[in-house]
Image 1 (tube, rainbow, N blue to C red):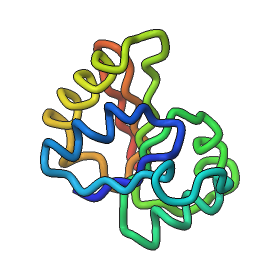
Image 2: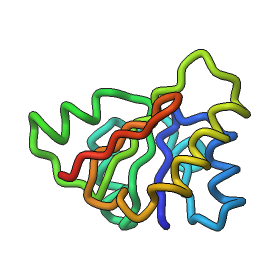
Image 3: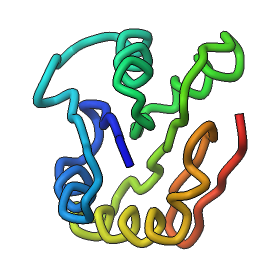
Image 4: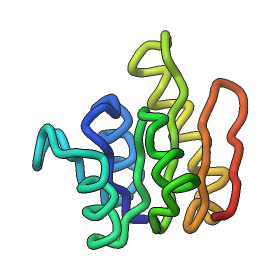
Length: 116
């Protein structure tokens, strides 16, 4: 799958997904400091699912009706980088087929997926 990781996503998550064979563009390696609308536009133009730890993307999608091919909100605060990466890897192995055109939330112990 193609992903665009917002710059706030822990680099360990980016690396583990790349190791899993996913194509992951990382804003921190490309265009640091761009605004959220530009991040969504970049995800759309590269046909990527957006990975983020920023809840503001929910506002853009649900209130402002911003179009996207999918967003994964990572809610794993207070965990180590390795623990975050392992949870995301495990969640994506189980649910990757459902991530396109969905707003998904990864939390410790579960993944919620809501179609857009």
